[in-house]
Length: 500
Image 1 (spheres, one colour):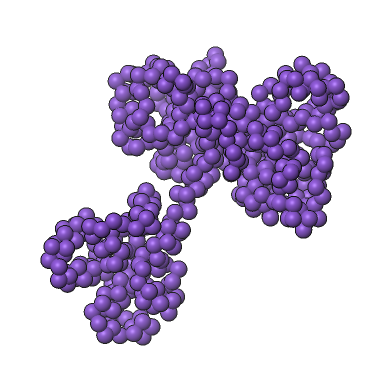
Image 2 (cartoon, rainbow, N blue to C red):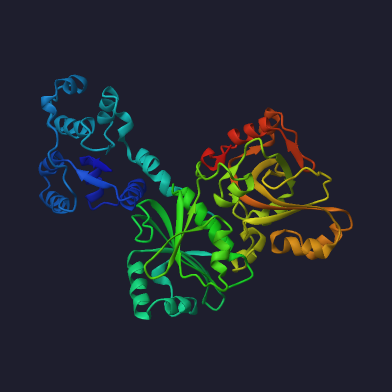
């Protein structure tokens, strides 16, 4: 993509005064998205007319750092254009027209300008959606970048690879898999690339968990070869700080990051241990599959986020949910339910919910384990009996009175009264303590094991539910497909991730 910046924007950038915050943000966005910024040849003429010799020389010397729009189209040969914008009476108008004509003739994709006269002319030419002021440029080009912000727990840190200690013991296994000097060269390479990672530091400063990531759009040399495609590469995923479901958390973060950066596929390479391989067990549970193998025997695991219509024809609803997570089946083969949950439990079960208040212990480096998980457990004294694998759960946060989150049932256990049996099934996936489970087990307890898929982009408030004719649930309550469809639409659930 190519963007033309007019003379005024250029001077604003290159003069020795401080840039506005808005312009700094826009230029960073364009740079990070690798969008080509061009200067029109007429801009050079305008700078050369500056009577301030020192300022002119500085501007012209800096001009060499920018590509010039070559073979710019000549507006004076286009009578229709001149009729629309008017024949220029001043040199400034002629320069403005030349810059605007480059957009009109599709020599560039967009023009960034603060000139009100140019904006008025763009309306007459019906190209106003491609002539943007700085704020509009931030909105148009910054959307995808702003989407990169995902909620990570305070115990994790987003960092640059170059800040990691290469001698940390977390890298020992990688050094064994590769030649140590080769590993060192790779580490230098990705450090210089500015590669980012999510990392958990123990209290002693050592690394307890690490995921290094990279967005790629290139073919993968393997058997069979994988064609070029925009993918998130998980370059390294290591967890030594066990017992906190950090591996599951990393999968969740990678998927969330992938979605918010408009990517449909994730992959990683791995030398599989045939005897016992925790990583393979973890990732295959969420839809990663062996797609290819490299010449050296390293396997390539791919995760598709959008359901393949050819693959799902013979799949059951729960299989679709597992294979293409977070995509899910929401057709008439599955039931839909509203599930009430108290705010204090919602806080712990859904730690990545927007606007959630984090605790001091989290900022001290502790994890809320049940919040790290994708697979979670919900316990209730409800007597409902028609829940089945694949059914959809909408979680209704009481007190705040809003539908916030969506999950898919994996397994249901009815009428349990043995606290040990309940605990064996829910372990670290529930908000309830052993003592609370013991109290609940005095009555028949319903255990729902479910997979969290996503939060509603637009949480539905009580007023929305009343407008839709949805009753506030006092206990787990089934809703009709018609009501579910209203929730889906009003909750702004992305239909790319639903199959029906």
